Image (cartoon, rainbow, N blue to C red):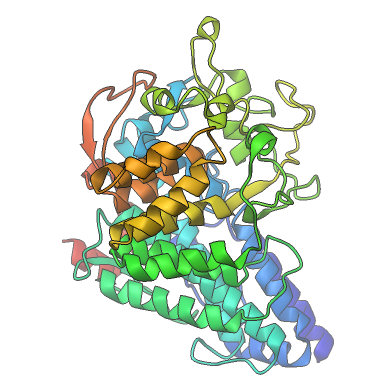
Length: 498
């Protein structure tokens, strides 16, 4: 019996890796059937062999970087980093400055996707995050359910990881599918376990209640967890996600507490000096909190974040599809700021301002030394928490704390940060927002910052569309629509949309 259970468990883990090819998992994102193990089977397997939970959680993590996890087979469908690009482009900070292949032009940079629920971009974002949620729910159910505290430390840590990743996925859904935080607005279906099917949209308040409950639990469950690698979520990641969630709701005092917990914990150091132009390609970098160590066995190639972003990989930029920093944002970076050097600025090349010195394969060979990606993915850096803590402090009235944190941070990027002493009120908030956009360019955080700061974006001269047009953070064109397939296959959502 034991061998049979283990085989089934391994099969379930493989299904987490591979169920990106069938449309039925979008139509019913928590489909129950012969494809996966039941929660009872999982509990039995875990009771016999605790390593089953590790295998299952590894399978869940793999979804964050596997291709086709959004169910489209498109070259912009490769896990979390795909939606980092979506967000950066929608925010306007990333310019599609030259388009040869058109993966993003009409649907994202010209807003046709978020304006039309039949476009696959809506389907892709929806499917990816609900797939992560479903996988996390299976792990949680296998450990006894979301109200259970596992007995062993090992299973507590797995539960904490699964709850954090579920919360992270629901949070991104709220950001991509709601224009701004409105607790009473019905926005998304909610699934708390792997047996629930086709639910109606519930209020943002109900979604956030689940998110916050998950993160509170995770912070407790992950106490004492020493992870084996940065692909795994630890307590710091739970604090960081919680800080983002609270800031999105406008609860800045508590957001500061969680962001500052990461900063003051001292486990990570800010990237400085040569690291800031060193390629952002190594998970071992001290300032990286969470990411993926990619290698030849994983086998990513053109269909990857590197394939869309890096001139020095086998990639679209190498063949003329350029993703650049917005011209106006580049112009706002001081000449003596080390981060100015992250971008290629050469008039003979058309000043496309590509990140040739921020993100690159270490071989620095156009078209790539290999067609297989080996440079790593970053999901989160400690710099985010320095800046978010400063923002939250300023917005909660602690300007002295905010200025100290911001000044200490900026002093690692420019020779003289004393100008921050004179800032206050809106000028201080504007500077924190600017520093966030500069520091985290291309890392998928500009969209979140745009919504938190209720910004109006105006695209610079190197965009291919909507140049100079003011667009508010809550414009319909910046928020995705519930996809056509969900409306067709979920009768509860269909009724609500009528």
